Image (cartoon, rainbow, N blue to C red; front, side, top):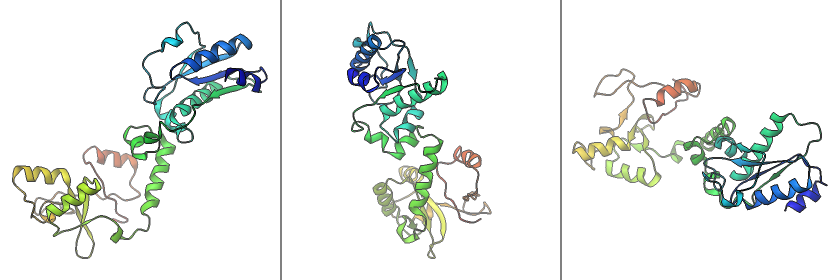
Length: 266
């Protein structure tokens, strides 16, 4: 590989970036290119959570090898690039782009980025939108794309296609629906399919364990009911969340509550 890079670049190369797995490729490239090209910079990538590259130790094969530096890449940046490549390649590409921007390289400078063979080892986290969001690895652009995708998925969907509970549905049946679909909350509707509240899995389980609730109870007995007055049956006042609600306001809401339902109008 080192010989091929040298020939393809016709012996003119300013910097090369490579991620470290076992370290053999990085060490070999460093030794070969430095023996052929004066002043070439060899940089290796350092991440934390990215598979293969996120190691906390230096391989023995790297001992005695002098590189021009490690480039530390934030995991969020790595996975941002990773949506176009694979995670480890994303980290290495990110390192090269940063280096080029920070070093003020002259026009015509040539940088090589060595990428991994494929994404076969990284598809589980890389292609999981939920995993990226849960681990805070989605940058602003990726988060926006995921949001738009989620909105488009349900735009124009009829209520009949969505999961909900009728007020008279038993707790037993409700738990089956929630566990089958992995729901922690489910909306509850009235006979006219108007949204009247939601059932919380955590709350129901606590009520059952304490003996307050039974599996035959209707969900309306234990659901959280929307009551603008904040009075009656111990129901608390609720806050209206619409598509126009600011993210800052929504962030404050999530400090107190685990889920939110939005309304198209107040």
